[in-house]
Length: 174
Length: 433
Ligand SMILES: [Zn+2]
Ligand SMILES: [Zn+2]
Image 1 (spheres, each protein chain N blue to C red):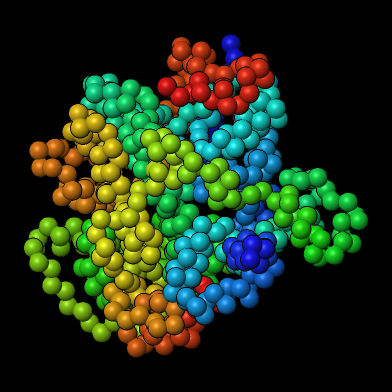
Image 2 (image 1 turned 120 degrees about the vertical axis):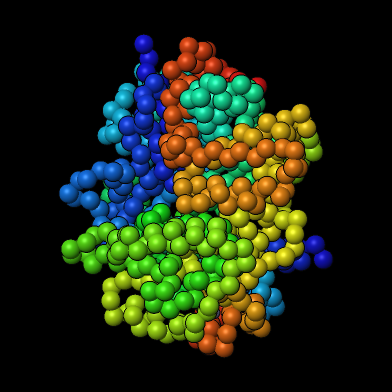
């Protein structure tokens, strides 16, 4: 079967924006810990942390359409645009939205360069030589000896565990 | 004579001014901001401006043209530059040359978009693209002509900036690309990490990037001994030398936050000096650690929050990214790998000519900690010498200013006519060796 549905990656990428919260939840059930780590690292590069990662582009563009009367970054949208369905608008925004660095990187296809040519990918420092990793309690910062079975985050004591369960558990995945 | 605009276009800060000057004319955030009080995105004030109408940046939304260190939004950058050139530098771009910084390994598609901005939108007369490491090397070599950097013609520049950290060997004013190593952590990630810690432990500051930048700059430092400092940070009340309070803006009297007792915030400097020098094995009495609930209660009744171990756990990431779950080596190993990629002939002199630049090297004790981590990784018969630039934020710009005023500069540039004839890709080859 070589149709589109046989390629899970492609199917995902075209729908990521729309189904993001659901998909994230689904992924979370299969591999919470990896997802939590990735989501956390991604969050460290965010500009507007209050905004959900998946909605960031939509949100930015929407605010410009409505608020930007100087025609700063984009030509002012015609009135008709505002009457378009939300879906059509989202599609349009996705097309004109600047691509992220990771998208441009993917497009540049650096892997095709001959191995002796230095590149962005090859300049990454690479994994540490020691595999030991220190763990700090995500609640109080002290050395943590326990791991949450649901999300993999660390805590140092029963007290911190309770706070974790109440306020933070699966925050980055759900 | 044509003036040269020197533009260090950082992901966090733009440093811009006139070639030949000692310091840049303007240093300002490379972004647009939308404060709560505004419906539009606005240009930020330059740093150090004392205008009475300063923007209240509480919960401001931000848009940046640079993502992970690279220029990805040319439209936004055009807007920011246009404002910069007319309102701050007051230059006419068609009669100026541009010296522009660009990070190593910028993708060809990004270089093309940049060249379009420079030549098609702003009509600059000519362009020279420089990397920050070579400019830092140039500046350091020229400020101490008798120093090793100048005599040996090489150095290892560690640039720990807003978006990422690079260790780059430089030889005869050229960065050796095959030796450049990168850690994907910089000041932006550190501020976000601090936001995360404070939001979880005391009060929600997830939307307060500018406030937390200030907290980071004023209160974070690098620990020389994390385990012992973690113990110390558990002490309750005033016995805890790391404890300090930061007062949030109230939007009425104060539109900016401030450190409650700046003197007390510096106590740790004296205390740890003493303890590290007098006793070999440090034994610390840990009294009953105060509960997180206690801290929460205090924070909610007053308009402030306390920091303790956050102060050193944040910069700690640069030294151990693995603690965060990143599969990357820390700064000391990064330097060793950069140097090991060079010919062994260079190794001794590179270890002896390490230059720190970039805003994230400003944390107290950064160089000291780095030296402690680096020393055991380097063969005994090599010297390790680490120099922090006098002003790590302006160092790159100053090197650019120096280069722009050198007699060879004009010949190194690509002119608009050449760009139009040859296109971006062929012009870019000029900037390589
Ligand atoms: Zn804890
Ligand atoms: Zn959990």
